[in-house]
Image 1: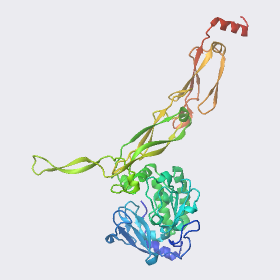
Image 2: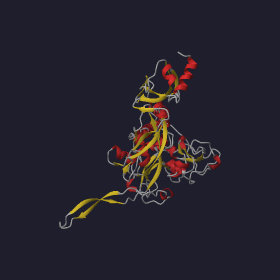
Image 3: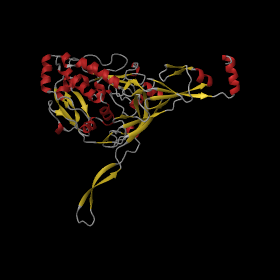
Length: 488
């Protein structure tokens, strides 16, 4: 949870420091191929007025004046609304939120009010917010942007709300940058990323930003201190696979309920992925896709374009009903009843990066927490991926040993032989024997078997079975040997 910063103290410190951090947004200015609305209108009026509460778990819901709070009050999860910073023509909506948000102190948010102003939509290509710029397709702040578009909303204070678009925007609603910039940053945005970021991207972004915003380097600047707290909190969640899985599928509120053990877990999803013996020997990362059911958040009573695509039937919910017991007078008992869910669900392919460790075996399982099936009012279950070993044309695995077979002619069995075997990592293993080889003899090559899981420097043995191939015509073979080596 974000630290509860003392809003008034931070605000006074900020004023005493005399810091001015940017210009207000001019939404009348076009956001085309030029500089957009980047002209300065002077310092923003950052004075915090109040927390303005709204209904319907939407920042755009009807105003609820009775829920307004002072600037120092911590607004906990479950309330929707926004912070009002400034008055009159300089009034700014800062950190507009639904009921699913992190704790907020408006005094702190108004210190960084320019981050909630809008400069415009910046279009990019390549299905990536970091793709090549397409300035001819830039749009002003109030323009409606389709969720499939790639680019970013440029906000004040250097803030960018990234939108990868394309397939990543399939289950998102259309938006305006005015709304996106005024809203609370999601956890990916706090790290300068989008929700397609890899684990490596998340770690690298956190290291870079934590160095930039660490209090030891920012001299206790209140805005920088607030940014560091947000960056730290974001990494603590999306940097941990299980928490990230719950956050992506169900949001912060459900994540917090999960941490407090207030919500059940959905069913486990089982799947198999075929792997080669080479992959089990060398280790490798492979991507597999498995279909799973997800609840479409916010679609229970909605008929938006996004929600209409959620046409998969959700699992039934359990409802507690009061039932009168016949023959027992006025006695009423509680009974659990399965009822159809009002929620809407969808089937979606889930990409999982399966890390095959050297020495793993067919039948081993890899667990992906919170990446399985989801049911209404539950967090996603786990996904269990079982490795299915494919047959190999040269080697057979038995525990940590590898077995293979070579064929020897009668002369090789009597006089000796040499062989070269290509191993699973591409190396060549040389075999040589100068004596008499008995039928079905087995040669043992130390340390050329499978690596031990957990310690790939230790390996089993390679067992080479020698199969004798007899000549079809014994007399002819004997004559050929006499001719070649001379009669005895």
